[in-house]
Image 1 (spheres, rainbow, N blue to C red):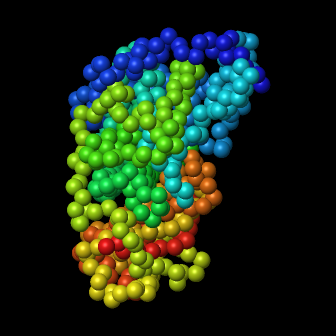
Image 2 (tube, helix red, strand yellow):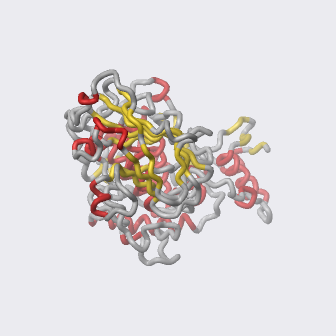
Image 3 (cartoon, one colour):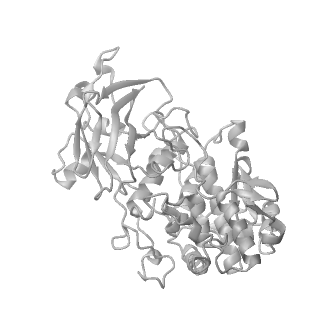
Length: 486
């Protein structure tokens, strides 16, 4: 259907956006806005403004770009979404019907002024079996769009606070109480509404902040972007919400805590960027990649990756930044040297399948080109779970242990805990995800140092995988390996 943009939605840049656009243009000459931690007095004040704005945005029609639902669907939406109902023009006046059809084209794609318009809904990128590094730039631009929407709702500048879970791994009280629809920040599909504490270690950014490069173009090697996205980022998602909320990208952005989570992720990125000599890839295609969103009244908001690397030019900063670890042999990122497979699960015919009960995976030692005694704690050891897939989003996270039974006392299991993994974003073709599975990487060097994993006796090594809750789908793992890098 052809839509005349001029009659349907008027000028694309509405008067509500002009002050913000002026602010961006002159951001370098103005004091930047400050994003504060949720526990601080300034952060709590921002959360009150946020709640006021979210309440208003939720009250608007779902087809309206200035609504909560429209913007959440920009991230992703479920296949069951009734698009015809959202963009129904039944009972609308001719002028209103034209506007709704225009908004539909902006959301889903269509023809406007004789030109095809690419829709912005379901455009969040994440990496899986194929590597992409648009995750951090896209979400930075998305937050800028959401901040603009909130500013238009409350009529004043707004800086998104961040969930400071690296210091206090608790869901902020404002998002839990009151626990009813009088609180626009309350979302029923959460695991943390009753017990607000994240699992111990779930908010650990050590691995990401010790990386020396943005990314390696090899799924079995760690880099900042892939490490942060696959580990801390995804872990927070699956331990915060259910499959109807933060644990599933189709619903995640409907939960108001989503945006404070991604403000925290953006802060970690900026903390890392400020302390690395060459933090950004030089790839011209990556720098030129555009990230497009729709703001108030259908106004387009587009940034290239190059344009959003400098937060000062965007007009914001954070109240504090994380300490970036100095790379030492003890913290040196995996993948900088040649890697060698030293153990695997190839004896598991058909791979590994995790349904709801804990699963033990026996590993076999691989043939080495040198004496196994050379494998010492001075090298780096990484566990990889490869071709991890599920038919539907399991809605839970998974804990990984070495050489222990599932019924062992908690304190004994804690000493043998390797890390978490999650399938956030893997299913429903989210972003870059295709039919293939993802690869999970967990640095297990500390377990070697403590003697939990014995490099000279790898054939006696067993992996334990435990779901954190009741999964809604089985998980298949094609291959488990331990890799060594000197």
